[in-house]
Figure: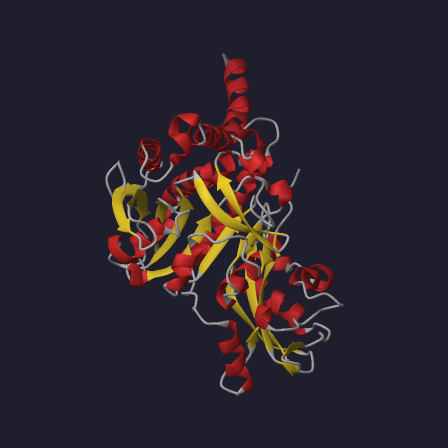
Length: 442
């Protein structure tokens, strides 16, 4: 009996570990997340839904499916299980465009911010045409299949579950929106913002998921050069993430982000399969790379949490920001808004500064090490016109001991090559995350 009890005690921790380990870092078995995404993509891309065309029976069935999956993930539906049916009369067409949106929400915990929103959207429809840029030439393409946009919907469903599980971490509320008739000039998102959702003025930011799942072609984020969203991407680039998107200044293709942008709502557009061009001939479930899609999911989830908890991103055109600086009405130009970005050891990438200076000369505080203290310090600093690092301060800190060491190393930085705006050297502002991690004892 004692031997059996001892054997159980030895095996129990292993079974508990197996149950709760992070599937992103295990190649031994297929994770539950991947299995669910495969099922969602398989159904949403199936011929039974007839391309989920706007106003079709297939779109209705897709809407019911997504609504059911939202509920299964613990999110509350904003409309009924059939979605929000709408009709829009267009000047270019004698017929009324009919389609539907599906939306769910997760309420934030902060008393002041829970009535502010981050919208995360993906295209519900799939069968249709859109114009994309191919080698500088506008080309009309027909969209049908898994990567346009069953993969984005599958990720939206998974985000619903993850955000609901961790809703105690969300200050703002999050709306999950499957947009109908997106390929028809963003009709679904336009209807949501202008007719259906009465609190559109309280939407602080939007995130679009469009054709995610073919990361072998790249993972990209487009922000329409929004300074605050670019800064968030920059800050996250210096943190430990399973994958990092490439920030692009060229719009991958017209989509729902344009509708949010028209309402002056800062928007981040994540994609893999449409940049620089979309190949409709390969648009089948078999091309979706689910392991990489799971890593993209982790990054986008972290991005949404930062949006939900941080300051409201400003909708501020880049040139206006530069003009304010050049006329002496603001203190520094955001790092990513410089025409020529500041560089350290010849590189404008903040990760180089972390790798070649910060982590080389960082010394883990002995007292923090002895007490098992670890965490992150977010440091903001200015690179002045001469390239010197000045005005170093901690924006967030896990512990005073870690903060003191992070500030010490950055204050001791060698000179940078200063940034420029319109040929003039300027003061530029940058934020980075300094990570302190203890190795686990074997």
